[in-house]
Length: 241
Image 1 (cartoon, rainbow, N blue to C red):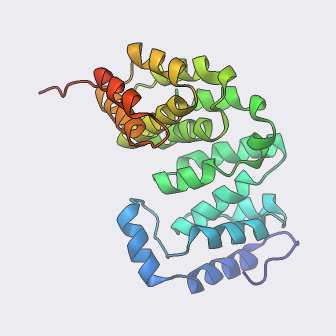
Image 2 (image 1 turned 45 degrees about the vertical axis):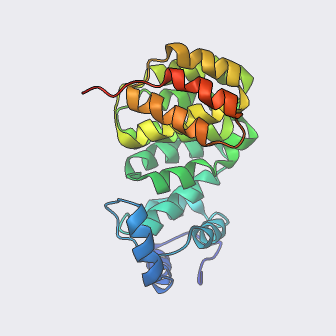
């Protein structure tokens, strides 16, 4: 990415950056990605590894001035902004920019790439656990998914299990991408803590789709024995007609 310097960002520099993104567009990759992701943003067609490289460069500049010029036209532009936020190491800046960014997330791909990149959470997970559990009580489905995927990435640990189960039980939306993230999280928790997670599933307040998808994901895992996979079928719920 050319013309990215340590100077503060201005309108001209930001437009140069956007023009560079356009030059990197790959039509074939764009058509492939459009089949996987539903979003209101225009997709240029730039691979995630390349976007991470660009975000890494930007994170070395004056990031606060960068955020002040960010626009929301391109999918890649929005994802890069998220990756730069994920690189922040100041707690106050991180939480402020994170809250501003949450409404921009409208698809699973931006959400998941964003959530697995939090440097400050990786270094000090205890400081942020309550915050991300709190996101599960929000209304916007992709904000809830941010909470779920971040918990999946950083908090599958004995000390957090009971609180996670409780927070998952309090999710009220039936949104597809929330259900899928919940089942993904519970399946991973089962892999590492099968007894505790099975005890939870016995009385879980999650909806039928999420319960059945959780069981399906666990049964797909090579890390679970054939015997346990068969046992888990007793928790599968019948489809309501």
